Amino acid sequence: AQSVTQLDSQVPVFEEAPVELRCNYSSSVSVYLFWYVQYPNQGLQLLLKYLSGSTLVKGINGFEAEFNKSQTSFHLRKPSVHISDTAEYFCAVSDQRNTGNQFYFGTGTSLTVIP
Amino acid sequence: DTGVSQDPRHKITKRGQNVTFRCDPISEHNRLYWYRQTLGQGPEFLTYFQNEAQLEKSRLLSDRFSAERPKGSFSTLEIQRTEQGDSAMYLCASSATGYTEAFFGQGTRLTVV
Image 1 (cartoon, rainbow over the protein chains, first blue to last red):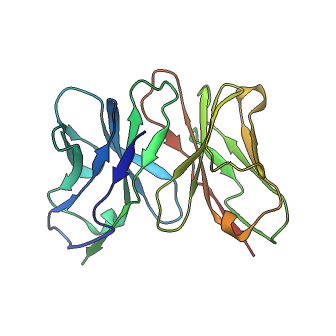
Image 2: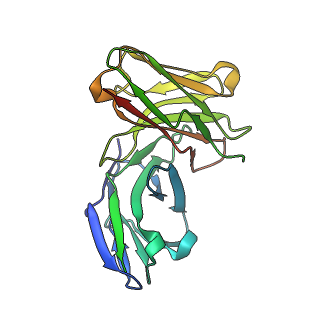
């Protein structure tokens, strides 16, 4: 089975400052890794994903994440945040062997950008 | 719009009533998922369809819950004899063979009073 831990439930940050949202996972098998964003009363939108290859992946809205296999981490970063980045962010994994692609999500990190 | 569509967006019901939600996936997506999200939590997997076949069910899906996907297109999720603990956002997602990510709808927020 897989599990995902998002270490920070709330992250306040000033506008134009950098931010890092932390994600650690546990799995006995190889997994794909994802970050999704959820705006209030909306569904989830894919920010970026890691499948294989380069450990640094770039996504939409200027976000990037780095896969670290030895530390089983997939932290999300943005060098300069905007007010519009205020949202809930979810890290997720899926089993590479499972053709059903069931996702396991963390509990989320609420990012608040302060003007 | 070719995204995942869910109906209704909001539902308020009295405890003990039955409710049914509908999900229309992205056209030609053969995989469909239902997730439940409670306040302050991440989405939790409920069930998965490949075409019309329900291939996987979570133990969270008690016998009061039933999901169908007739003809492998839209899906319905029914909750019988609703309880206050059923209050949550119910998310539908779809995907296709060869895809690694899923595409989510905007969800149906259920409030049981």
